[in-house]
Amino acid sequence: MQATMPAVPVPVVGLPTPAAGSLEAYIQAVNRFPILSAEEERDLAERFRKYNDLEAARRLVLSHLRLVVSVARGYLGYGLPYADLIQEGNVGLMKAVKRFDPARGVRLVSFAIHWIRAEIHEFILRNWRLVKLATTKAQRKLFFNLRSMKHDFAPMSKEEIGRVARELNVRPRDVVEMETRLAGQDLAFEPEASEEDAYAPVHYLAADPEAEPSRMLEAAETERLRAEGLQRALEALDPRSRRIIEARWLRDKKPATLHELAREFNVSAERVRQLEAKALEKMKKAMLAASPAAAVLPAPAAA
Image (cartoon, rainbow, N blue to C red; front, top):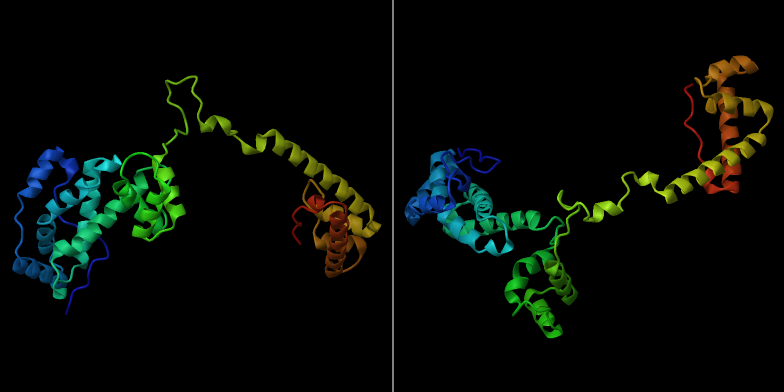
């Protein structure tokens, strides 16, 4: 019976990492691991799939670490640390080993390279800029191909934009947008501590948005409209209904309950609730007629 495959990347014990020493020493170390023959690779892959043999998985990973180093080297132009690119590529390699099926007749190197590139791509997109540049399929395609397709650093001409759009099967406006975003620079949200006179976007934002003068004036006007509308709505009620609303809704201390008011007016609690609901509806209509901004009442009291 075939063993259940693990749900996470293979935990490869003893796997060297770029962070464990100098990068040059790491590259020399991975290049010393022997390359597996087709028969050895198939045997190890079958042992892992059938028996969850982690030692077999470890040998598959170790024999392909040099592939990760080679693939990661192609992404150095994005300005991210080589060691980090290799580390992410190793994660992709382990995912590939977990999913590799030797019965399909494909070598692991051909299968793993797609997983390695995918993991590196995700890492670059997460870290190259603070603001994500590529979120759609077309943007990702442009992000990783536009630089190599440009002839120089000058802005692209209309003809070049059309050529790139046709070759990558994207819209010309997507090409223009990505070229503009790639040519931009990150702007620090806060200035460096040494730059006492420097200004950054954070200086143009209020510490408390509600403290902005326009919002304070708006809040004061809204409160005034509510108070005036509430007073007019209360004046439109009969004395008993007004007493119920004031006791239930407008007390600073603990609001009166339905049963307390029922005893006061010598009626049932249900009748008090009906009078309250009718009075609230009448007040709401009156306040809406005066000003929509004023039609906000406090939360009801407990029964």
